[in-house]
Amino acid sequence: MTNPNFLLQTQRVVCAIFIFFALKSVALSQWQVVFSDNFNRPNGPLVLPWIPMQDTLFIVSQQVYARPARYGSMMHYSQLDSAQSVQLTVDFDFASDSDGRFQFFIFGSFVQGRGSGYIAKISRTDVSLWTVAPESLLHTSSYSFSTNQTYTAILTNDASSDSVYILIKNSQGISVLSIGKSSPRRYFYIPAVGIENSTAATKFLDNVVFKRAGTTDVIREPSPHLPSSFVLYQNYPNPFNPNTVIRFRLPTSAYVTLEVFNLLGQNVATLTQSQLSTGDYRIEWTPTLLPSGAYLYRLQTETFSETKKLNLVK
Image (cartoon, rainbow, N blue to C red; front, top):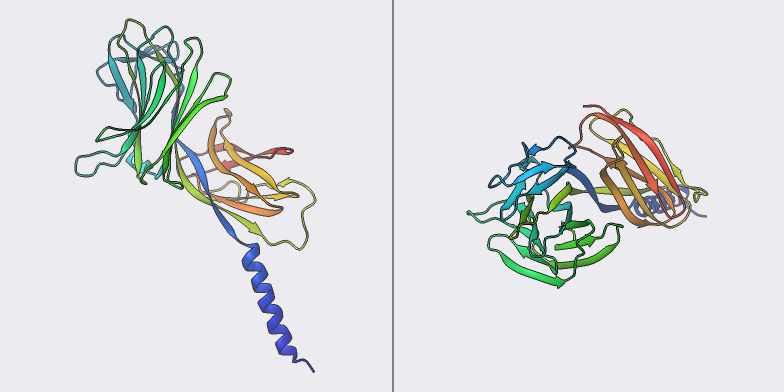
């Protein structure tokens, strides 16, 4: 005759094993906007938190303008926003300038007077990646830029893969060039953008966005039944401070994007962009850099999209 206590202990072990595998956590990148500027304000010199160098950069027609034959850079300092993964996005165009160039920077902490970071140098015919202090070439690639359209440069240091890369998109949002290189992990806190002109023509910068990345845990929750439909639940608690939990349900394996937007439609956080299997999931979000206010969060797959509102109160 089977011992009832033995059966009970066996059931407990099986249950514990099920919970262990069902509640597995996946660490994923969580991008948050540290600083952004679209320069939609009256013409004039840049002001804090931007720091113009050599008095060359001004706002003209809601863009940043560089005077001819000058070099200028501008930075946003925030040591409190240090991170191992950072991303700088900038719109640029060459107008009629044939031999000028752009330089976009992400700077890191300084050790014994030497900085650590990266520079993306873009001319009309090539794009190259460089280290900062000492300045050393990592990689270069040829590309012929058109003079009659705006491009977007996305410079990223990814700590999860110990790499740095630059992605170029054209005015239609299509990727036209991507180069990358393995690199040691570093901490960053200063984004900067610069223009160097050597002719009488001028160039413009616009829509500067600096993001940092931490990690967030996407946790699969136990469920007695497989989900039959997509569901995005209301976050809880709501309103919240300092964190909240967002739950969602997937009836099939899907590439999932969960993003948070402000009421102007600007992305302020990407909580996950990943391939997930069927099941119920939850993400805990702690928006340490965002001000109080109402935000929208959106779950999107290839066949499903739903948006809900949440309220952050500090």
